[in-house]
Image 1 (cartoon, rainbow, N blue to C red):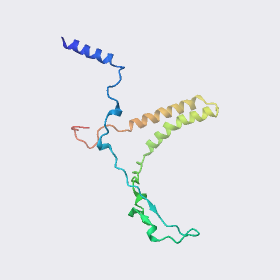
Image 2: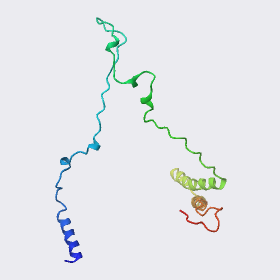
Image 3: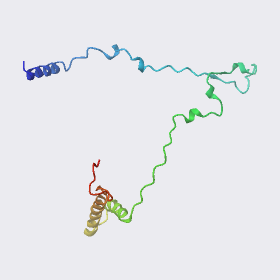
Image 4: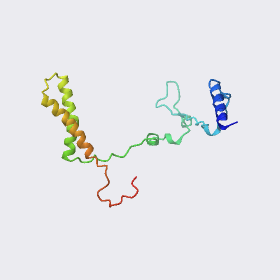
Length: 162
């Protein structure tokens, strides 16, 4: 047999057994011991009431059952557990005037066209041209100012730039 015919036979077997059910059901597989979670001990706290009910004696200290030392008043470990406060975000970078104008043009042109269309304003040809030109100009200005080139202080050889 050639290697090609062996491969063809394997593919035929795979295709023939495509709709067959699996031999072992997942319910038959044993549960791994590493996945077992230990049962938590039940915490039962019985605190005496402030006033005894009519016809009963005042509760004694022996009636108080406390299985957990963390339930003392004044402890707030449970409240702090799992609470995460992220650090404050870094300040936004300061934008120079040309970048601010490019952002205004990028969003201002389409915003004007949208407002004018919704308000059914009569748009002159020059206003339409200005809005589209502002959008395109703002986009081009932002792309040009991205600065994906090498840093200015690098020498003639950048080496391995990652």
